[in-house]
Length: 234
Image 1 (tube, rainbow, N blue to C red):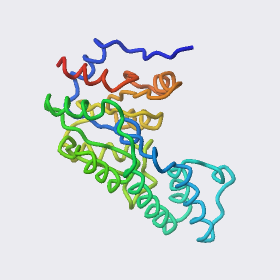
Image 2 (cartoon, rainbow, N blue to C red):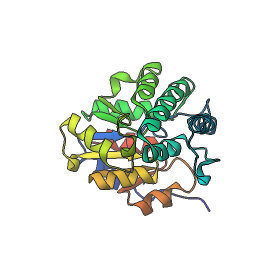
Image 3 (cartoon, rainbow, N blue to C red):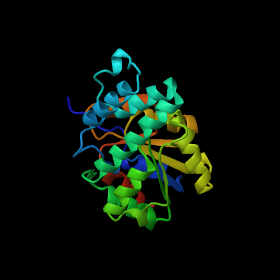
Image 4 (cartoon, one colour):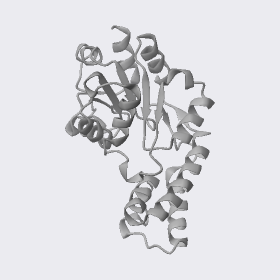
C-alpha cells in the first residue's frame, strides 16, 4: 500500500504562517550524513573502543548499527567513557560529512526561509563540528543562523530530550509558540512536543508518515518542496 502524507498544502501554509523561527534536524532534512561512511561501520568502531576501555556492552548493542545508541548508553554508564566515545563519534561524523549526500530540496527550503525572514537553526544529535563542516563544504553556511549540535558535556540530553531545542530557542530569543521544528524521526517529534514547539514530520522513508503522525506531528510532508512551496505563499 502506498503511504501518503495526510496534510494538504493549505493546512501546511497556515501552520507555517505562525512560525517566525525554523528549527531543522540535520541528518535527513539537510543531508544523508552516512551515505559514504555507513553508520554501522562507525558503530563497530565505537563498540571496539568501549571494549578496549574495559566495559561490557549490553547484548542489544552488540550488533547495533546506530552509533548514537552507543553514545547514549555510555552517557548513562560512565562520564569519562562518554567523553571518549563522544570524541570518537565526533571525529567519525566529520569524516562522514565529507561524503554526505544533500537532501533534495534542502537548499531551496533554506533559501525560502531566508527570503521570508525566517531564521533557521539546525538542531541535531550530531556534532556541531560535523554540521558546520557540511555547511561549509556545500556553501550553506550563510543560510543557517545557528547550529545547535549535541552538547559534548551533556550527551545524555540528546533528543528526545527538549534540551537542544530550548538552547536554540534561547539563542534565537524566540518563544516556542512562534517556532516550527522539522524532523524525520519519532524522537524529533517527541523533543518538539516536549519543547512545546509545532513539529512537522519529514517522512523521507516508507512507513514514516504513520510513525510521525502517530507520534504527534502537527503536519507530515514527504518532500521538502512541500515546505518550500508553502513558505513561498506567505
